[in-house]
Length: 175
Image (cartoon, rainbow, N blue to C red; front, top):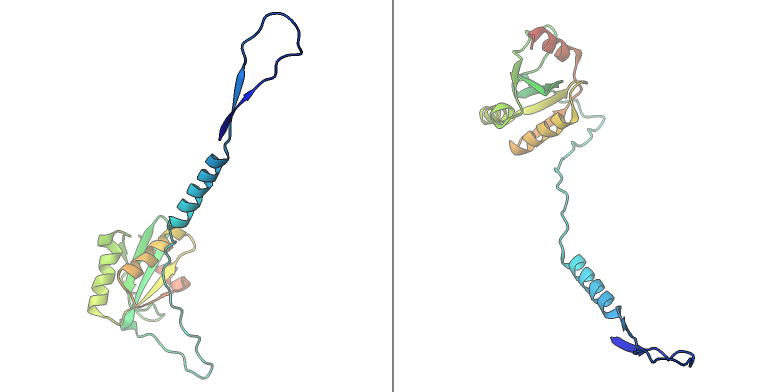
């Protein structure tokens, strides 16, 4: 492990005798072995943080011979996300020639959209939530609303492109 090495006497020059200087040499091999053993031990026994993901089930692609299925307006619930962390909702479908639904503003808080979704699900378990982000809404709000779908255990929801009628409804509501 360690050894003491003696230095040879000088070249035989005369004069006074000096005390022998002894140098020490420490062998670091066992220390390196121990360090690698500890490193290996901690690497193998540590559990790494597993990323959490949200499970999404995508719909089955319909066959060409199947007729398209219409969503009843009574089962539709539309959420519109706008710039500035604004969120609106209305019940039913927005169709031309029919009266416009009432657009209600809410927040992303637990007593906001979550409370509305839970109430809607309690009243109508067959609710299909249509999520319509505007071009000016941000990604964080999209993730927040998907989290709310998971928290409220919504069985059916869809990300839908916002229509011109929806954008006009936001503008005319004055919110």
